[in-house]
Every structure is written in structure tokens, then in C-alpha cells.
Amino acid sequence: MLENTDINRAQGSVRTNTVPQYSKAPARRMDDILRGLTFEFLGQGAHKTSPEALLGDPNATLLDVRTDEEVRAVRFPLEGLALQSLHIPLSDLPDRTEEIPSRGMVAILCVSDVRSAIAYVYLQSQGFRNVRILAGGTAQLLSQLKTGNVRKQLLARRNYQMTGTNPGESKS
Image (tube, rainbow, N blue to C red; front, side, top):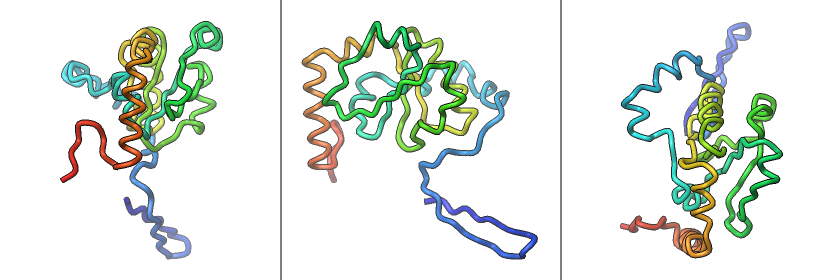
């Protein structure tokens, strides 16, 4: 938990509130964000996540920024995955950011990562810190949603819910 102190100078009082760590950070200037998108940063891939990581994260949200027409043409079989998903077309994003959870990773999806990159920078400028571009776009996600892969993810998620242990993580 982070501590947030509010000082009201007119009344001379100090009020301290406890703010959860997952709260949205203050908005950042666009030029500061762009300066951070260096060759080294982009080369590390820290701004991306894989479909496997998305499906394995019980706190993640899939943010689909495709148009309504694209969503009608290609739908994803997410039923039963307990994955929170939102469809907010990129053009609607400025008016609907309050719908995006500030807790957990937000993985942004579009067809070819172009709109995802725009949404990534925009959300960073609005104070979202745990946002990622879903690597490979719709094609990679569809590939990961094949029956065998989905079954494996469901079993891993069930194990996490029962034991609190993520796959590949050992309890010490």
C-alpha cells in the first residue's frame, strides 16, 4: 500500500489516505513517454506480452481495440477462460478509459499491433502502467486458443485457484 497525504493549506489540516499500489499513476507527458521508447526498451520487449502469458494471468484483462466491424468478423472463443475482456475501439478510447481496470495487466489487442501501439502510448499518458501489447495480434491469439492449449491454460488456472501457485512457480 502507498500512502497519499493531502494537505489543505487553507484549513491547516493534513489528511493521510492509504491508496492501493495498483491504482492508476498520475498522467505522464507524451514527450516523456516517447523518450522512454528507446531502441533498448523496445528491443527488450517489455512493452509486449504473449497470448500464453495473458491466458495464464488470472488478473489480466484483454483490451480489444479493433473496430466493431472487425469484432463481428472475427470473434474469440473466450468462454470458460475466466479472462476479463473489453472491446473499446481505438477511436472510443479517450471517452471510455474509466472502464479499464487499473489492477492487473491490460493486454491490448488489434489485428497487426499498430492500433495496439497507439493505445499503449495513450494509456501510458493517462497513467496506466501495467499495459502491454499482445504480441502477434489476432492471429497469434487465435493460434493459442486451439483446444489443447486452452485445456492446458484451464488446468493451470484451476491449479492456481486451488493452490495459489502459478505454473512454473514452486512454493517454498
